[in-house]
Length: 416
Image 1 (cartoon, one colour):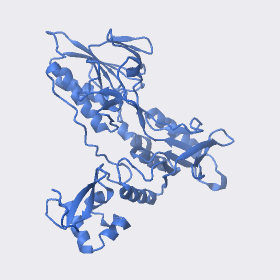
Image 2 (tube, one colour):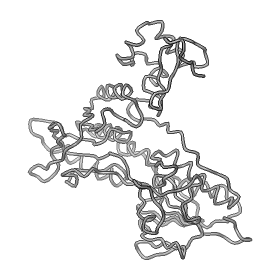
Image 3 (cartoon, one colour):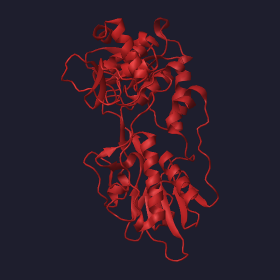
Image 4 (cartoon, helix red, strand yellow):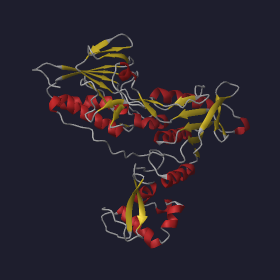
């Protein structure tokens, strides 16, 4: 988008989460000519904060706020956009305020997915997404911890979802003093990140921390006690878990309602369709972060969302001459607060070896690497991959890297 002469163009950003904040800061840093007038409209009452660190807010009271934008940025909070008029290039908020734009960026993020099970709306049931959600959860948990329980039982908590955020939520509930269970419908924890062996190893680690895992068993429903609050979670195998608190962390759904309403294409399963420049079918409208569907994928990690923001900042400044593209992303992430270093695409045994915790190898791997000399060579190889050792090779498995012993002379030893 070219800047005609010395005129100033108007940018409106809908959403002030991490992606929206990064976009604004990236544009301010690079826009030395002050060619863009920026207006940000957020739904939450507070400015942007670090959602990745929500667990540290709940467990430690950490300050999560991002640095404030400069005075040249107009920030409106607590007044969400309810309509986009693409023909006239205006947006309207819930209060009736309107703003015109030359470029519009949708950074509306995602919403927690809550399975449609009986009892999902009972008091004591929470999602794990915003500071307000966590404040309500902490207050409720404190009240239940102060109440008596039959048979001297500790107050219980159940987290539905054994993905990255679900495991952090479980650890946080445990930190609040709740006897915590994790329910995951897949056969093992973090199924999108780990293979079965890695999931089994992670489960052992988590159970050693005092958490209870129910994997491969869908939840049938929630039931209230005589007080009207959630009191019991029932699984599909008829297992019943007494609980005072339930937290849903069963995935996200991109917030694409505004895009749908104004006629922008969205994916079959949600998400605003954008190209590699993060531009929608409307040349004046971009989408970034968890609401954007790029190459058929929704990226739920902060790193890719920040990369999208950088791409759009470059495109806004470079206009039609811009070439910045979002090529995809390294989905490596870290499972915080669990004492587990989990890098996506590398099975847990490799991570353990990298950390030199040979004792953490699963029994399955001990069977494979039963020769102590071979085991030492393998650990040495992982810690110093530039050192040639033809006795160890790697082969791809389910788009992951898994170590194998070289027993077949035809097996190619992959470059290190």
